[in-house]
Image (cartoon, rainbow, N blue to C red; front, side, top):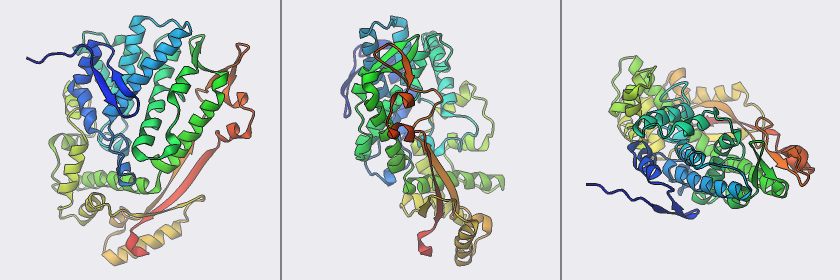
Length: 406
């Protein structure tokens, strides 16, 4: 018979020892739904750019739990009332906030299941777990849905300065080796406070917040929106798109059972059976699909799969201005003539697009608490031009095409 460890301590490369605060939370961590996160890569295909980026959603969720424990300790030390039930709910909500991610995380969001976000899937999982744990996740779900009367609790989970962002920036920085994301999360948490049930940052943490936002912006351009990563994710998305087209033409494509179910079933209802099927999906299903697809008779599918498996990626050029359509068409026509493909087939290998990022938005603004007890919005609190620059949206346009054309 399996014994339960009532007080589990895990060793994390970022924070050192992480403790699981209760036996029930340990049981949630041991649940197959949560264990699946060990097989979901945190950063999609970023390991094709940064070889160390093989960390998982499991790592990230436990890191967020650790930071939430620190945040609760800090807020209580500042006389913010947090009951034991609220504390437990915060831990469960942050632990499960990403449980709905599918294979390769954001890289395939909306591709396997259209129009359903990972947050919506996380909620389905949380509701299902709530029945298995006798309703003990009810408050966590209320907080996660933004229905609880103390808004700062949701802000600790989802905002511009939440435990999710504080962990993934530091963790992704560590595993990629990109130093710009190595933020001082402990310093930021120490500066948190609550006023009228709203999460605020004390004035002395102003420049720590600026460093955090600047670091996040740099991580987006150096890591999350790295041009090679963009091209690789497009290829992976194109694999799923091509498989769907072939299936619609009654052309057989070998697929893992559960992945095949969702690709063929356009409107899953997420009954308990659908949720169980989704809970069996992970990165290995996609890897097997790529291996099988690389041997398919369809040249488009086989080439797309081989390019990802062998890291023979497309060339991608960035521009501050939109890519002229005639330039894209030139690459497209050259590829068509060299490989005897139709225009539609060639479009899998030659395409253009745009990516954008804003370091800070005034939607759900970060509020600073000054020495006089007044709340000031971040951009107004920071007098330097560098704070106003955080509001600027940066857009980068790109064109992808096979390297052999150069």
